[in-house]
Amino acid sequence: MGLDSEYFVIGETAHTPLEIEVAPMTIKGKIRCLILLACCMHPPFYLVEGQILAQAIPVPAEIIADGKSPEVYWIEVVGENKPSMACNIACGSERLHVERVLDTEIDVTVIPEAL
Image 1 (tube, rainbow, N blue to C red):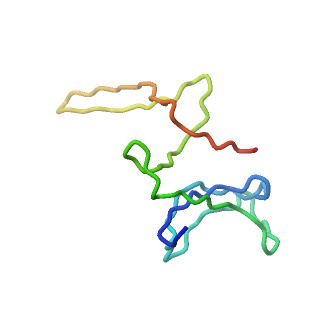
Image 2 (cartoon, rainbow, N blue to C red):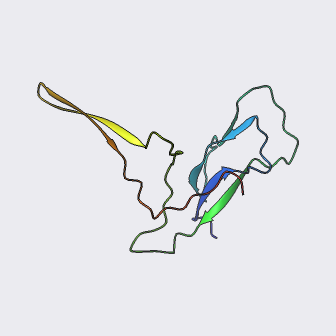
Image 3 (cartoon, rainbow, N blue to C red):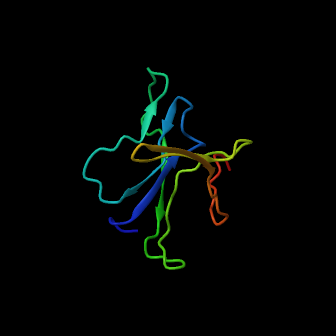
């Protein structure tokens, strides 16, 4: 993939030390500044030179399905409390608080924490 490609960065669960947390994100190939991808949850912690912390999975921008390019969205574990969102709506002096279950759709890919 070229320098203009996008990459999905996630923690390498087989190699990342438990003390390190990697923020999953998408990044462009041409990075012109430093990006904070990982932090140590319980400092001080020292890494061995060459330690693998994360993996960058190329996201092919040229593949289009149903008129859309591939996209990555933040997810959370769905337990007994289904994912919901609260919204406060105001118009003049009237206020309305709405809380509804989010549409989770079924056309998603789940990347497991461990394979």
